[in-house]
Image 1 (cartoon, one colour):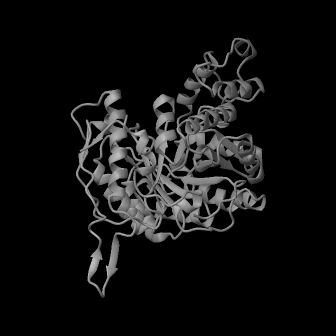
Image 2 (cartoon, rainbow, N blue to C red; image 1 turned 30 degrees about the vertical axis):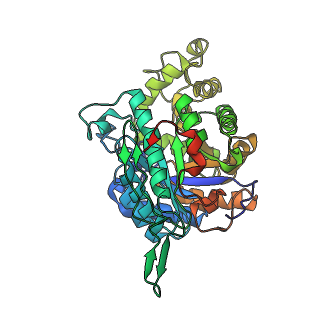
Image 3 (cartoon, helix red, strand yellow; image 1 turned 135 degrees about the vertical axis):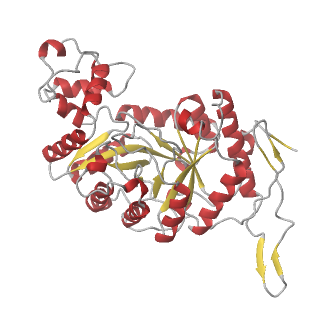
Length: 452
């Protein structure tokens, strides 16, 4: 394991179906309008992440048309596993993280696919462990949708079976001894005979471990189940904090859960999702976002703003501030953590269009401004204690990711907040994690299944 600088942040990059954070990004000048089915866009994205010496490049997976595609591309498109193989051969150091759902995949399929990619990439894979909740995706595989408890129970079993499968071929079992004629020590390679309530797998896996042992285990989501899964079963997590205060509190609670599980929070990385809009001034960045909103669906956003402010905003002049008589009645919606930001923007006298352009209703917080100011905000969050990592999503697509790598990354590197060169060759190296292969470290944490 390479020693990571504790004072440096970890960053991964993401392209949603080849586009960026904004629904109208596919229409942005210079972007590939059909990026969702162009493998070169994703390959270039991974190469950009490697150019910036980022930790990794991430792909989500929703195997269905889950959005209204009349005007907006869906959130994911090409099979991420195929894309990962292409990206692995086109890069050398950057980590590659892909989702494989426990709801629609069997343990051996996940274990073999991820180990293949880990070997092809020479130890740079991460497995994002998620359940599938989207009904359209589930109905592409099953006649119905599983109950909540079944979905999470199956997820724990699949995770355990996959790790046991990876560990069924331990380091050192592959001999390749030409002189003696011994290919592998079959006494070390063993079946797992996993029998759970939802899944079974005999094993062993048919491939040896990679340079990092097994892929880094990622997860996503909050709530009691999300905290427990991250604290006891993962190396890293994707966070979706609506505000800085929320992100700090989330990491404090997750850190406590990790300690309670007998693990060290310093060995865990949370990647907070952040959207970025970069320009030569804050004014130009705001104008850029206004233009992006115009290419999307501003009317639906205006409707949601009404919900956030608890006043009727739909039908008002979008290019004027909210009238004073309505502002006096406005209150941040307590059920939405982002509402306070929307309220503060409205109270400053921004037009409705400008309030929306600041991104208060985006799924991820939006940092807009100059490269220097965006670096300042990332540093502010990092030093406030939100965990060590960020998942960066450009606003329009590949060009906005290039802007981040070419303009923001050098500033962070100059400040000593980001590596200037890779010091290791595997994703575990990048995240400061030791070699690991199998279930042993987590064995006391998974009583849900039995080994027979």
